[in-house]
Length: 400
Image 1 (tube, one colour):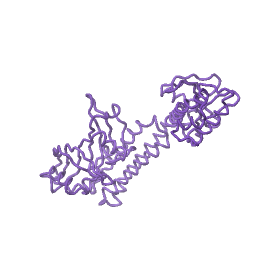
Image 2 (cartoon, helix red, strand yellow):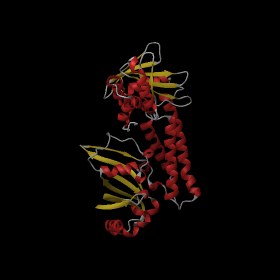
Image 3 (cartoon, one colour):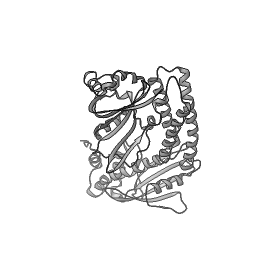
Image 4 (cartoon, one colour):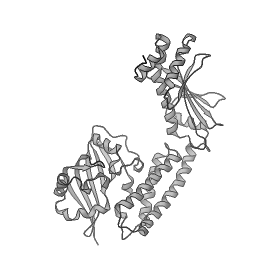
Protein backbone atom coordinates (compact mmCIF):
# COMPACT_ATOMS: atom_id res chain seq x y z
CA UNK A 1 0.00 0.00 0.00
CA UNK A 2 1.26 3.49 -0.83
CA UNK A 3 0.42 6.66 1.03
CA UNK A 4 0.77 10.03 -0.70
CA UNK A 5 -0.39 13.63 -0.46
CA UNK A 6 -1.51 15.79 -3.35
CA UNK A 7 -1.80 19.56 -3.25
CA UNK A 8 -4.29 21.14 -5.66
CA UNK A 9 -3.88 24.89 -6.16
CA UNK A 10 -7.29 26.56 -6.36
CA UNK A 11 -6.86 30.36 -6.09
CA UNK A 12 -10.55 30.94 -6.68
CA UNK A 13 -13.59 32.40 -4.96
CA UNK A 14 -16.07 29.89 -3.52
CA UNK A 15 -19.40 30.45 -1.84
CA UNK A 16 -20.10 28.21 1.14
CA UNK A 17 -23.30 27.99 3.16
CA UNK A 18 -23.78 28.25 6.93
CA UNK A 19 -26.51 26.50 8.94
CA UNK A 20 -29.05 29.09 7.74
CA UNK A 21 -27.91 28.56 4.15
CA UNK A 22 -26.56 32.09 4.00
CA UNK A 23 -23.68 32.55 1.58
CA UNK A 24 -20.09 33.04 2.73
CA UNK A 25 -17.64 34.01 0.02
CA UNK A 26 -14.14 32.74 0.72
CA UNK A 27 -10.90 32.82 -1.24
CA UNK A 28 -9.93 29.16 -1.64
CA UNK A 29 -6.14 28.81 -1.80
CA UNK A 30 -5.57 25.08 -2.03
CA UNK A 31 -6.99 21.62 -1.40
CA UNK A 32 -4.73 18.98 0.17
CA UNK A 33 -5.70 15.33 -0.21
CA UNK A 34 -4.04 12.44 1.61
CA UNK A 35 -4.56 9.14 -0.21
CA UNK A 36 -3.89 5.51 0.64
CA UNK A 37 -3.65 3.69 -2.69
CA UNK A 38 -6.70 5.06 -4.54
CA UNK A 39 -8.72 5.89 -1.42
CA UNK A 40 -8.85 9.44 -0.06
CA UNK A 41 -7.97 9.40 3.63
CA UNK A 42 -8.40 13.10 4.39
CA UNK A 43 -9.13 16.40 2.68
CA UNK A 44 -8.03 19.83 3.91
CA UNK A 45 -9.16 23.13 2.42
CA UNK A 46 -7.00 26.20 2.99
CA UNK A 47 -8.81 29.49 2.47
CA UNK A 48 -8.76 33.16 3.43
CA UNK A 49 -11.55 35.34 4.81
CA UNK A 50 -11.83 39.02 5.61
CA UNK A 51 -11.76 40.08 9.29
CA UNK A 52 -15.47 40.95 8.99
CA UNK A 53 -16.33 37.47 7.73
CA UNK A 54 -14.13 35.86 10.37
CA UNK A 55 -16.11 37.75 13.02
CA UNK A 56 -19.27 36.08 11.70
CA UNK A 57 -17.54 32.67 11.64
CA UNK A 58 -16.22 33.21 15.17
CA UNK A 59 -19.53 34.43 16.60
CA UNK A 60 -21.59 31.60 15.10
CA UNK A 61 -18.91 28.91 15.63
CA UNK A 62 -18.97 27.99 11.95
CA UNK A 63 -16.63 25.24 10.76
CA UNK A 64 -17.18 23.70 14.22
CA UNK A 65 -15.10 26.47 15.83
CA UNK A 66 -16.55 26.09 19.33
CA UNK A 67 -14.70 28.23 21.91
CA UNK A 68 -14.02 25.21 24.13
CA UNK A 69 -12.21 23.47 21.27
CA UNK A 70 -9.54 26.12 20.71
CA UNK A 71 -6.05 26.58 22.07
CA UNK A 72 -4.98 29.97 23.39
CA UNK A 73 -3.97 32.40 20.59
CA UNK A 74 -0.26 32.99 20.06
CA UNK A 75 1.28 36.45 19.59
CA UNK A 76 -1.77 38.48 20.58
CA UNK A 77 -5.09 39.20 18.95
CA UNK A 78 -5.93 39.35 15.23
CA UNK A 79 -5.35 42.58 13.31
CA UNK A 80 -8.78 43.88 12.17
CA UNK A 81 -7.37 45.04 8.81
CA UNK A 82 -5.65 41.83 7.59
CA UNK A 83 -7.20 38.71 6.08
CA UNK A 84 -7.26 35.52 8.15
CA UNK A 85 -6.34 32.05 6.89
CA UNK A 86 -8.28 28.96 7.95
CA UNK A 87 -7.35 25.33 7.35
CA UNK A 88 -10.36 23.01 7.60
CA UNK A 89 -10.82 19.24 7.28
CA UNK A 90 -13.78 17.63 5.51
CA UNK A 91 -15.99 15.10 7.29
CA UNK A 92 -14.66 11.61 6.48
CA UNK A 93 -18.02 10.38 5.18
CA UNK A 94 -17.95 12.99 2.39
CA UNK A 95 -14.50 12.11 1.05
CA UNK A 96 -15.86 9.72 -1.65
CA UNK A 97 -17.66 12.68 -3.26
CA UNK A 98 -14.31 14.03 -4.40
CA UNK A 99 -12.83 10.87 -5.91
CA UNK A 100 -14.40 11.10 -9.41
CA UNK A 101 -13.30 14.73 -9.86
CA UNK A 102 -9.61 14.71 -8.97
CA UNK A 103 -8.51 15.47 -12.52
CA UNK A 104 -10.10 18.91 -12.39
CA UNK A 105 -10.98 19.58 -8.77
CA UNK A 106 -10.86 23.37 -9.16
CA UNK A 107 -13.53 23.41 -11.89
CA UNK A 108 -15.63 20.90 -9.97
CA UNK A 109 -15.71 22.97 -6.78
CA UNK A 110 -16.35 26.20 -8.66
CA UNK A 111 -19.25 24.63 -10.56
CA UNK A 112 -20.67 23.28 -7.33
CA UNK A 113 -20.54 26.74 -5.82
CA UNK A 114 -22.48 28.17 -8.76
CA UNK A 115 -24.83 25.32 -9.67
CA UNK A 116 -25.37 23.26 -6.50
CA UNK A 117 -25.14 25.69 -3.58
CA UNK A 118 -26.78 23.19 -1.19
CA UNK A 119 -24.27 20.44 -1.92
CA UNK A 120 -22.95 19.00 1.40
CA UNK A 121 -19.37 19.76 0.33
CA UNK A 122 -20.23 23.46 0.59
CA UNK A 123 -21.81 23.40 4.06
CA UNK A 124 -19.64 24.85 6.82
CA UNK A 125 -20.99 22.30 9.31
CA UNK A 126 -19.27 19.56 7.29
CA UNK A 127 -15.83 21.10 7.73
CA UNK A 128 -13.73 21.11 10.89
CA UNK A 129 -11.35 24.05 11.32
CA UNK A 130 -7.89 22.80 12.27
CA UNK A 131 -5.91 26.04 12.37
CA UNK A 132 -6.75 29.74 12.22
CA UNK A 133 -3.88 32.15 11.63
CA UNK A 134 -2.92 35.58 10.38
CA UNK A 135 0.36 36.92 9.02
CA UNK A 136 1.19 40.41 10.21
CA UNK A 137 4.34 42.52 10.55
CA UNK A 138 6.69 39.58 10.22
CA UNK A 139 4.91 37.47 12.86
CA UNK A 140 2.10 34.95 12.83
CA UNK A 141 -0.76 34.92 15.28
CA UNK A 142 -3.48 32.31 15.59
CA UNK A 143 -4.60 29.14 17.29
CA UNK A 144 -5.11 25.40 16.81
CA UNK A 145 -8.27 23.43 17.49
CA UNK A 146 -9.11 20.04 18.92
CA UNK A 147 -9.54 18.72 15.37
CA UNK A 148 -5.92 19.53 14.53
CA UNK A 149 -4.77 17.15 17.26
CA UNK A 150 -7.16 14.40 16.21
CA UNK A 151 -6.57 13.74 12.51
CA UNK A 152 -9.45 12.05 10.66
CA UNK A 153 -6.92 9.48 9.44
CA UNK A 154 -6.73 8.14 13.00
CA UNK A 155 -10.35 7.03 12.77
CA UNK A 156 -10.84 4.25 10.28
CA UNK A 157 -13.58 1.65 10.23
CA UNK A 158 -11.09 -1.11 9.48
CA UNK A 159 -8.31 -0.21 11.88
CA UNK A 160 -8.49 1.83 15.08
CA UNK A 161 -5.18 3.20 16.33
CA UNK A 162 -6.21 3.55 19.98
CA UNK A 163 -2.75 4.57 21.16
CA UNK A 164 -2.53 7.52 18.76
CA UNK A 165 -6.11 8.56 19.51
CA UNK A 166 -5.38 8.46 23.23
CA UNK A 167 -2.24 10.55 22.74
CA UNK A 168 -3.97 13.11 20.50
CA UNK A 169 -6.87 13.68 22.88
CA UNK A 170 -4.69 13.83 25.96
CA UNK A 171 -2.29 16.30 24.34
CA UNK A 172 -5.14 18.63 23.43
CA UNK A 173 -6.57 18.46 26.95
CA UNK A 174 -3.15 19.11 28.44
CA UNK A 175 -2.38 22.13 26.23
CA UNK A 176 -5.90 23.49 26.69
CA UNK A 177 -5.70 23.17 30.48
CA UNK A 178 -2.26 24.82 30.56
CA UNK A 179 -3.73 27.78 28.67
CA UNK A 180 -6.84 28.11 30.84
CA UNK A 181 -5.91 27.12 34.39
CA UNK A 182 -5.05 30.67 35.45
CA UNK A 183 -8.43 32.14 34.44
CA UNK A 184 -10.97 29.37 35.02
CA UNK A 185 -12.30 27.54 38.05
CA UNK A 186 -12.90 23.84 38.41
CA UNK A 187 -16.59 24.03 37.49
CA UNK A 188 -15.91 26.02 34.31
CA UNK A 189 -13.06 23.70 33.34
CA UNK A 190 -15.23 20.66 33.96
CA UNK A 191 -17.97 22.08 31.74
CA UNK A 192 -15.51 22.97 28.98
CA UNK A 193 -13.81 19.58 29.01
CA UNK A 194 -17.25 18.00 28.97
CA UNK A 195 -17.99 20.01 25.83
CA UNK A 196 -14.86 18.55 24.25
CA UNK A 197 -16.05 15.04 25.08
CA UNK A 198 -19.53 15.73 23.67
CA UNK A 199 -18.08 17.21 20.50
CA UNK A 200 -15.93 14.14 19.98
CA UNK A 201 -18.93 11.83 20.41
CA UNK A 202 -21.00 13.93 17.99
CA UNK A 203 -18.18 13.80 15.45
CA UNK A 204 -18.00 10.03 15.69
CA UNK A 205 -21.78 9.69 15.41
CA UNK A 206 -22.23 12.04 12.44
CA UNK A 207 -19.00 11.61 10.51
CA UNK A 208 -18.40 7.91 10.88
CA UNK A 209 -21.88 6.45 10.54
CA UNK A 210 -20.52 3.25 8.97
CA UNK A 211 -18.57 2.31 12.11
CA UNK A 212 -20.15 -0.27 14.37
CA UNK A 213 -21.11 0.33 18.00
CA UNK A 214 -18.30 -1.98 19.07
CA UNK A 215 -15.77 0.04 17.09
CA UNK A 216 -17.08 3.33 18.53
CA UNK A 217 -16.56 1.86 22.00
CA UNK A 218 -12.97 1.12 21.06
CA UNK A 219 -12.53 4.76 20.09
CA UNK A 220 -14.23 6.22 23.15
CA UNK A 221 -12.52 4.03 25.73
CA UNK A 222 -9.06 5.64 25.45
CA UNK A 223 -10.68 9.03 25.13
CA UNK A 224 -12.57 8.62 28.42
CA UNK A 225 -9.43 7.33 30.12
CA UNK A 226 -7.43 10.34 28.95
CA UNK A 227 -10.24 12.70 29.97
CA UNK A 228 -10.41 11.31 33.50
CA UNK A 229 -6.63 11.31 33.90
CA UNK A 230 -6.28 14.91 32.85
CA UNK A 231 -9.35 16.03 34.82
CA UNK A 232 -7.77 14.72 38.02
CA UNK A 233 -4.53 16.58 37.29
CA UNK A 234 -6.45 19.72 36.34
CA UNK A 235 -8.44 19.88 39.55
CA UNK A 236 -5.30 19.35 41.61
CA UNK A 237 -3.58 22.26 39.89
CA UNK A 238 -6.60 24.55 40.06
CA UNK A 239 -7.07 23.85 43.76
CA UNK A 240 -3.53 25.05 44.40
CA UNK A 241 -4.35 28.38 42.74
CA UNK A 242 -7.86 29.53 43.55
CA UNK A 243 -9.93 27.12 45.64
CA UNK A 244 -11.37 28.24 48.91
CA UNK A 245 -10.28 25.09 50.74
CA UNK A 246 -6.55 25.73 50.16
CA UNK A 247 -6.51 29.49 49.65
CA UNK A 248 -8.23 32.04 51.87
CA UNK A 249 -10.57 34.54 50.28
CA UNK A 250 -8.18 37.30 51.29
CA UNK A 251 -5.28 35.57 49.55
CA UNK A 252 -7.42 35.02 46.45
CA UNK A 253 -8.24 38.72 46.17
CA UNK A 254 -4.61 39.68 46.86
CA UNK A 255 -3.62 37.33 44.02
CA UNK A 256 -6.16 38.97 41.74
CA UNK A 257 -5.19 42.59 42.35
CA UNK A 258 -1.50 41.70 42.11
CA UNK A 259 -1.96 39.92 38.77
CA UNK A 260 -4.30 42.64 37.49
CA UNK A 261 -1.72 45.36 38.28
CA UNK A 262 -3.63 47.29 40.94
CA UNK A 263 -1.82 49.19 43.69
CA UNK A 264 -3.31 48.44 47.09
CA UNK A 265 -2.72 48.64 50.83
CA UNK A 266 -3.86 46.03 53.32
CA UNK A 267 -5.60 47.59 56.29
CA UNK A 268 -3.78 46.48 59.43
CA UNK A 269 -5.62 43.88 61.47
CA UNK A 270 -8.48 43.55 58.97
CA UNK A 271 -9.08 41.29 55.95
CA UNK A 272 -9.54 44.38 53.77
CA UNK A 273 -7.58 45.93 50.92
CA UNK A 274 -7.74 49.66 50.15
CA UNK A 275 -7.35 50.71 46.52
CA UNK A 276 -7.72 53.72 44.23
CA UNK A 277 -9.53 53.70 40.91
CA UNK A 278 -9.35 56.41 38.25
CA UNK A 279 -12.55 56.59 36.24
CA UNK A 280 -13.46 58.91 33.39
CA UNK A 281 -15.30 61.27 35.75
CA UNK A 282 -13.22 61.16 38.94
CA UNK A 283 -10.86 59.16 41.15
CA UNK A 284 -12.17 57.39 44.24
CA UNK A 285 -11.29 54.92 46.97
CA UNK A 286 -12.30 51.26 46.82
CA UNK A 287 -12.28 48.52 49.43
CA UNK A 288 -12.04 44.78 48.83
CA UNK A 289 -13.22 42.84 51.86
CA UNK A 290 -12.86 39.13 52.62
CA UNK A 291 -15.48 37.63 54.93
CA UNK A 292 -13.79 34.31 55.58
CA UNK A 293 -16.30 32.83 58.01
CA UNK A 294 -19.25 33.62 55.74
CA UNK A 295 -17.26 32.62 52.60
CA UNK A 296 -18.07 35.96 50.97
CA UNK A 297 -16.19 38.57 48.95
CA UNK A 298 -17.43 42.18 49.01
CA UNK A 299 -16.17 45.10 46.92
CA UNK A 300 -17.03 48.77 47.55
CA UNK A 301 -16.58 51.95 45.53
CA UNK A 302 -16.76 55.01 47.78
CA UNK A 303 -18.23 58.10 46.14
CA UNK A 304 -15.61 60.90 46.20
CA UNK A 305 -18.14 63.48 47.50
CA UNK A 306 -20.03 63.57 50.79
CA UNK A 307 -23.72 64.40 50.51
CA UNK A 308 -24.72 67.51 52.49
CA UNK A 309 -27.57 67.01 54.95
CA UNK A 310 -29.83 69.21 52.85
CA UNK A 311 -29.40 66.93 49.82
CA UNK A 312 -29.62 63.50 51.47
CA UNK A 313 -33.32 63.01 50.84
CA UNK A 314 -32.88 63.90 47.16
CA UNK A 315 -29.86 61.58 46.87
CA UNK A 316 -31.82 58.82 48.62
CA UNK A 317 -34.43 59.15 45.88
CA UNK A 318 -31.69 59.18 43.22
CA UNK A 319 -30.06 55.95 44.42
CA UNK A 320 -33.44 54.26 44.90
CA UNK A 321 -34.25 55.01 41.27
CA UNK A 322 -30.74 53.93 40.23
CA UNK A 323 -31.01 50.63 42.14
CA UNK A 324 -34.28 49.76 40.41
CA UNK A 325 -33.36 47.20 37.80
CA UNK A 326 -29.73 46.79 38.91
CA UNK A 327 -28.66 43.17 38.41
CA UNK A 328 -25.17 43.15 39.91
CA UNK A 329 -24.75 45.28 43.04
CA UNK A 330 -26.49 48.32 44.50
CA UNK A 331 -25.91 51.84 45.80
CA UNK A 332 -26.02 52.56 49.53
CA UNK A 333 -26.34 55.89 51.38
CA UNK A 334 -25.32 56.44 55.00
CA UNK A 335 -27.82 59.03 56.25
CA UNK A 336 -25.63 59.75 59.29
CA UNK A 337 -22.49 60.99 57.51
CA UNK A 338 -23.64 61.34 53.86
CA UNK A 339 -21.31 58.69 52.41
CA UNK A 340 -22.42 56.95 49.19
CA UNK A 341 -20.96 53.65 48.11
CA UNK A 342 -21.62 51.07 45.43
CA UNK A 343 -21.40 47.45 46.59
CA UNK A 344 -20.97 44.19 44.70
CA UNK A 345 -20.56 40.85 46.47
CA UNK A 346 -20.60 37.11 46.03
CA UNK A 347 -21.10 34.09 48.30
CA UNK A 348 -18.67 31.31 47.36
CA UNK A 349 -19.52 28.72 50.00
CA UNK A 350 -18.90 25.29 48.50
CA UNK A 351 -17.59 26.87 45.30
CA UNK A 352 -14.46 28.58 43.97
CA UNK A 353 -13.41 32.23 43.99
CA UNK A 354 -11.82 32.47 40.56
CA UNK A 355 -9.92 35.24 38.79
CA UNK A 356 -12.76 35.85 36.26
CA UNK A 357 -15.38 35.99 39.02
CA UNK A 358 -13.44 38.59 41.00
CA UNK A 359 -12.78 40.58 37.83
CA UNK A 360 -16.46 40.68 36.87
CA UNK A 361 -17.52 41.93 40.31
CA UNK A 362 -14.76 44.54 40.55
CA UNK A 363 -15.13 46.04 37.09
CA UNK A 364 -18.93 45.93 37.11
CA UNK A 365 -18.70 47.92 40.34
CA UNK A 366 -16.34 50.70 39.25
CA UNK A 367 -18.05 51.10 35.86
CA UNK A 368 -21.42 51.73 37.55
CA UNK A 369 -19.94 54.28 39.96
CA UNK A 370 -18.28 56.10 37.06
CA UNK A 371 -21.52 56.08 35.05
CA UNK A 372 -23.76 57.44 37.81
CA UNK A 373 -21.33 59.88 39.44
CA UNK A 374 -22.23 62.82 37.15
CA UNK A 375 -25.88 62.37 38.13
CA UNK A 376 -25.02 62.37 41.84
CA UNK A 377 -23.00 65.58 41.38
CA UNK A 378 -25.77 67.26 39.41
CA UNK A 379 -28.32 66.56 42.18
CA UNK A 380 -25.93 67.87 44.85
CA UNK A 381 -24.45 70.86 43.04
CA UNK A 382 -27.00 71.87 40.41
CA UNK A 383 -30.28 71.12 42.18
CA UNK A 384 -31.24 68.70 39.40
CA UNK A 385 -34.33 66.65 40.20
CA UNK A 386 -33.36 62.98 40.84
CA UNK A 387 -35.79 61.73 38.19
CA UNK A 388 -34.21 64.02 35.58
CA UNK A 389 -30.66 63.05 36.57
CA UNK A 390 -31.52 59.36 36.23
CA UNK A 391 -33.27 59.94 32.91
CA UNK A 392 -30.18 61.63 31.51
CA UNK A 393 -27.91 58.74 32.56
CA UNK A 394 -30.22 55.94 31.47
CA UNK A 395 -31.58 57.71 28.39
CA UNK A 396 -35.11 57.54 29.70
CA UNK A 397 -37.89 60.04 29.20
CA UNK A 398 -38.55 61.68 32.59
CA UNK A 399 -42.01 61.19 33.98
CA UNK A 400 -44.44 64.05 33.36
